[in-house]
Length: 322
Image (tube, rainbow, N blue to C red; front, side):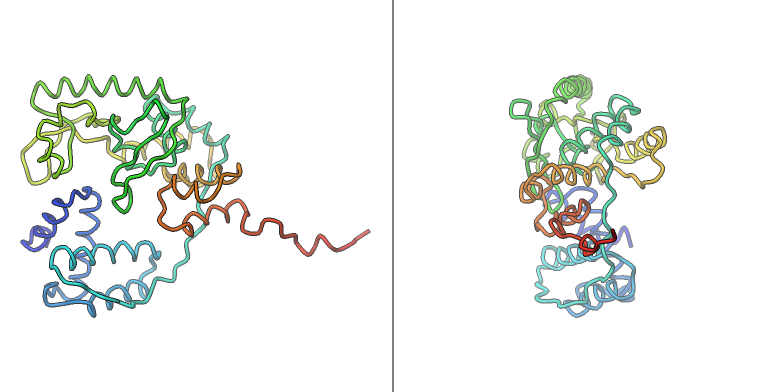
């Protein structure tokens, strides 16, 4: 199935639109699951009714969160709208009922402990995740051109939902970032001698054939090894793999003695939002910094700090026991 001509056609459509490899893998996964669910019928012989049946099945029979169901929907919409050039219309499927849990949030002291026991590079990654509210893949995909040390801002390109946004950059990171950029430029210069450079999306690679020689395209956190573009023999240097940072975080959390919380890289982003709201920042500002489409997504952090019932007293306060 993975090498089927049809799925290869879908892959080509995804790459032509410059989607990330992660998005490609996710979309292909859900499209394959959809095909398996319908006994390997070809998507061209199916349509809105079959999509509705599958999405309703996910909502009723699988213990998945509504956001996961929406990812499956996005994959199938791409399949029909972009690959098969067919509209699906109003699907009216049954949404998943699994409720979203409140996110785990670290205290500022816990964040500091984790960062202090980490190595130099990992320290910078964790500082960016916490200080700028980045998702891990957004952080690792940062290129030199995305760092603005004059206005102390970061540009996140092709974030979730294929959106660009700007967010905060702590001035305290200036020297660390300059050091990382200089190291990255040296790596790029050595790679360029062999005709190799940073990986670039398919569309940009065609538009800027010599872009791999320009410092602005170099990753801030380059991988230690050379790889090839998918389905080609062209060599390039990608960014650091997220598993490297995940492993480093688990070690740091253990060394910091934080045993009562399940901490992932995304926990820094949750902590960023929660701490800003706790300091009195406007929820719309936090929404923009996080890149959320809907303020309702951001509002979950008001539940973490209790703002959703701000000003409401427990009736127990009215009772007199003395």
